[in-house]
Length: 423
Image (cartoon, rainbow, N blue to C red; front, side):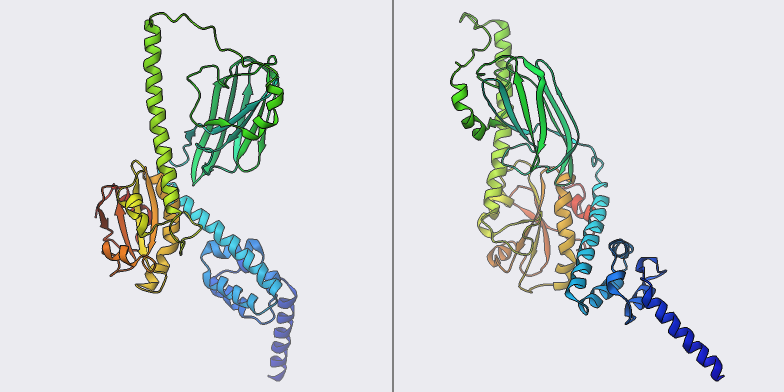
């Protein structure tokens, strides 16, 4: 019996020696319990166990207790190892969150279908070339896609065409430009390249030295999001002043308007009306952004959730200037008032909802009000007595409270917010 016991002891020592010598792959273990047990072994090399791919697999499988045990063990080692583990965990959690967000986005039947955007441009010229800067957004001062793919660019004697696909606010967009230039160009001598911060720069060679009065051939086809590239204009100002501004097409006699002129005038008025409406919409969005900037940042700072406050609430949420604006707003407290567990559980869902709701409901936006900062507003709306609380604002000046469970799915909340589903 003594010999058998000695053999078991020797085998155990050999096993532990081999275990300490060989790196442990936590993701290769059969269960989360086995991973937790492995992490409890004092001779486990945490640095070799915390491999990026393994950590991502633990998070992907939902082995959160194992991840917590890994983080706790790393805190008991060196700062270098703890930082390495923290970096792997953050990367894995972000990757998993993106997967979950994508599952929500595919619930929208239009997800994956690129919406067309005529991107904003700025232009300038010298005597021999035209310079165009394109930004992947509708307005030059608005955020847009930082990267694009599948770029298609073509120059011809008359025209310029550009198409690329990008994503902004989790919405896929097709950025497209196609226009006829004021005068013929040399296509073979023209070029383009992608610049930083979501932009493309285009260099177009003129067919002959000239001072163009405008970029497009048609005087009435200049888009409202076409601006002047000021730095480039100033750079080439002296060169351009050597040439007189070239005239447009030959002027017709100022006789009585023909039927063709009348038809053109109607089309021009229609285009102007549409452009004016789009300009008003853009102005309303800018005003909304300026007003939101007046509110104090709180728990949702630096996220897609808009933080609202009492001094701008009526102008932004109750009677918004933005046409079709619909708000889903969470009322909560960062000071510990209300159901703390419910607020903690709702926070990550509210951040994800803010990313996807605009694509699920036209004019939709997600916001939050910190009742510890805006007590009077929350009392006025009847939200202060029960936190957290979700309310819907549809631009009528009135609101209604969500009566369902706070752990309802994102698609359920989005459907209610868009008015597609009532309790």
